[in-house]
Amino acid sequence: MKVAPDRREAMRSMFLASLGFLARENLSAGATAFNDDAGRVNFDGVRSRIQQAIGQGDATGVAVAVVKGGRIVWEEGFGWANQEAGIKASPHTPFSLASITKPFTATTIMTLVAEGRLALDEPANRYLSGCQLVGTDRNVEAASVRLLGAHASGLPGIFESYGSEEQRFVPSPQALLQAYGRLAYPPATVYEYSNLGFAALNAIALDLTQTELGTLMQRRVLAPLGLNNSFFGADAVRAKEAALRYDASGCLIPHYTTSTPASGGLYASAHDLARFALFNMREGAKGHGAILNKQKVKEMHRPVFTGPSGVATTFGWFRSHTTSGIPFLFKSGGDPGVANRMCFVPSKDLACVVVTNRSNGWELACSACDEVLMNYLPEWRRPVEDCDSPSKPFIATPAWRGRWQGLLEGGGVNMPVNLNFESNEAATMAIGTGQAQEVTALRSEGEACTGLSTGRIDAPDTVRTGAKTLQVKLIPHGNRLLGRVFDIAGGPNIKNVRLPFVLTLSRR
Image (cartoon, rainbow, N blue to C red; front, side, top):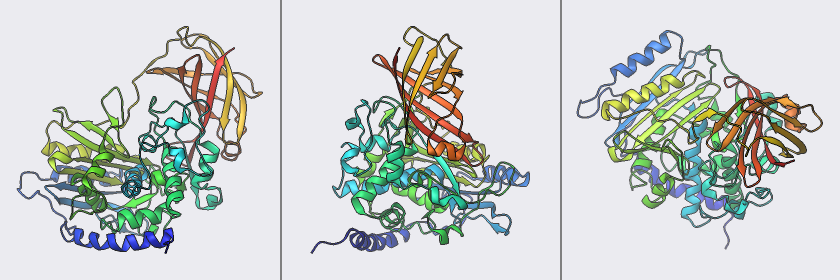
């Protein structure tokens, strides 16, 4: 008898949950500690740093967890999860993770790989029905599942947030890909941080299992690993337990969701993130959550795209090395009201997690994490989560100089574009029937040219959001220029939007 996908998922979840119960028996119960087991390291300096930031009004809520030697040696909450209601933050308070969701999505996908239901190096379109990626001569068959999770598939980035009154506008993963799932670059040639790639992973999981990602993640990852204070943001009941989000001035940010929940929709506590680090460091070993074997965990950690700095993307993580060459993995999460850091060093059985609910918490989260890790590894240096080439002044070589024309596509539009590079500092761009506008802030990033402009893109989403600031990135490819234009509205600490449109230009 054929078992329906939802029923099969539920049966599998019950079995793995029993394994998670056994795993929970072997891990810290969550009691706060201030020293590692040998008494070599104390965390008073980090505690003072966090308490001072909260006392000065520079932070609202913070939670920390540190893993060493297979157990949680310190976890503590500071400040407020909900300042208005007087609810304190604890190591078991769920915080919005923003982009630290991505490794959880990748892990969920990897459980399907382990079952033989998909392969990381097969074309993504093999597993996408009804919302296939569009190549526009950019070799879409080379856009593999692995590259989607490593920000190197050729898909551009995307971001849009929605308030409670805008939920009717939130697209499904399939609708989002139908609108914006066009390759901006040839696969595996350009790094661009891409939430859209994780929307494609979401659509693949939905096609294969007919199960929403939040439910699938709960059954396959969260419950089996015993992550009891973790849930997908679509769970409105559980969301009431979570830390609220605050802007840089400490003002409450109204609840919002985003267009790509697979890239940023998870909530989790510092305690649960520490447990997730244990799972990753012990590489799926029995007793720490038997959802994946050692080989599959290593496959997620394997470098995929390495930037000039030596930082590499993996399937869901970023990977770097200490100054002495010790490899480690890390991920940050940042949205309005969110600034988080998670790092782990498998060979040292060492991890640190810092989560905050404040837009300007980035430096606090990173510095606290750095201080903890340097206590154990003096050679630790803060990694930069970026595989781009360094930004340099643009030089308008003959390969760039002159007039170009072509098309801007995506979001339901197909508009003519004219671009003119006159000098190192002077360029103009005209979209549709609009007048040519200056392209400012011209810079080079490796082979790419970036710049800023203004203009009107007559797509439904840009009209609805009022996006008018254009951020351009182009690369030379043969006798053409290929890339994207982000149409941007808002700012990083408030409701904002970044919509991608693909550019293909030839010489006039």
